[in-house]
Amino acid sequence: MSKALELLAPARTAEIGIAAIDCGADAVYIAGPAFGARQAAGNSLEDIERLCTYAHRFGAKIYATVNTLVYENELEEARTLVKDLEKAGVDALIVQDPAVLELAKDTSLVMHASTQCAIRTPEKARFTESLGYGRLVLERQLSLEQIKAIRAATTAELEFFVHGALCVCYSGQCYLSEYLTGRSANRGACAQPCRSLYNLEDASGKVLARNKALLSLKDYNLLHRLRDLAEAGVVSFKIEGRLKGESYVRNVVKAYSEALDALVEASAGKYRRASFGWVKGGFTPNLDKTFNRGYTELFLDGERGAWSSMEAPKSMGEHIGTVKRLTRDGLVLAPESLDLHLSNGDGLAFVSKDGSIVGFRADVCDGFSIRCKRVEGLKEGVRLYRNVSAAFEKELATNRPERLLAADIRFCIKDGRATATATTEDGRAARTETAAGFDAAREPEKMLETVKVQLQKTSGHYTFSVSAVEVEGTLPFMPASFLNGIRRSLAEELDKLPVNALPLQRGAVGAEVRIQGPLSYKANAANSLDRTLYESRGASAVEDAYELTHRDGAELMRSKYCVRHELGLCPKQGKAPKAEPLYLINGGKRLRLDFHCNDCEMTVGL
Image: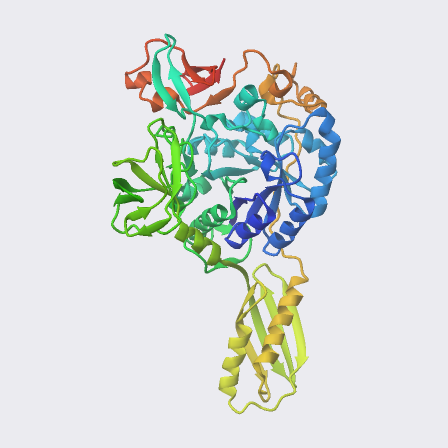
């Protein structure tokens, strides 16, 4: 039996979610009115219901993010929201706080463990699965071998991020934003201090790096690694970006949908898509022309690489050349490639002398001459990037693909009546019968061809094919309007039938996985339901979440990423600083870096 592979897309709004479905997404994740890990991306229940209705036409799924910590005084509000999301048609919840499992126990919703659950070992995966989750969203800083080990240790579905922004910290255990600003990442309000500029000093006060985004990572891009992930046991390929705009989501989803289609086609039946339908027409995707900080495959192969975007914590886009000379009303570009085409309104950027990114618009482009407003810091020899392609954005907005469901028609003419039966790719069947009391066709062969041509057109979101036309007796002449009415009637009847969607895997609560000893603040226990659950599993003590205590001496961040390695200061590189520990300095705040070489990890603390 074929294994279903899912492309999971982000949606800030219902409209973006619909656009993702049209571009090939098998599922969409979106926040409701509260408790989503992106506070700026909430949606009304009415919009959630509208998105569910559209997605379910194709057997696509909608997952609601209820993935923040829930405080004691919010439990009843969260319970009400869970029930409202079920009524709106949501298929599953993406959850960080295990209290939500208890709040949702009387619903039909499937539970997915958020990446905020910090699942990066087989032991943590087994424990999380035993709580009743049907799917585990894994930590991003994992290798294929680590994913395989988790697959071997669990039976839950595995979901893995394949594209978009990367948190430098292990997900769900970053307290840096809360410490610096009082805005908790675990509460959906991260201030993104990892994108801020820092100085790096050693213990003697020597500045080793100045004014760089030392904690900023490049963006994930695993477009060419989907087969490897599928073979490792991943069934859901997740795109990050619930704060991104529609053009970003369209471009990235279509690129990955095409790659996933190619993987399925080449698998000789081993894999299939998790929803129905196909994407017709539209723009040609190009991941280099959409928001990115440069791309990385991170630790997927179990090796370190150049992961940092410390020079450009914001989107730089594609390198297009250098400034050849400045003119009175702009500049002349020395292009990276003579095939480069610039358009009026292109967004351009460069890195200034102080390390900040300066962006500006190209007002008028004539070949490689660019007219623009005067830009402070722009000089001859500066490397120039295009972070907005006006022509490509126009193509995304105007050349939109269409999502269609395939349906086969069998058409029969007998005793003056026309009968048509349509069967969809998901197995639904509709039938229509009508009188065909017309005169005999003068040219039967031409009439047969007209029948096929008219019935094989698109109606609604169905694209019809004709597998058989049976004629008993005299073939009547049937006008195009008559045949079109049959096709539209079939589409209307099919729409009345629920799609035979593939079921989601449900979790089952198991008590066999026990906790040994106490749990620290890293368990993120934020309410009495959490504490009761952990104690019932054997925890001797349960410390409150960091957000509740601001525990002195807490580890604020742990990561596979290493500043020393990125700067060529790793002892294995033979250039270790003489005076450690190292410190990040910004705005009067001093953060200590410690390096755990046995585990090849870095921590940020005080």
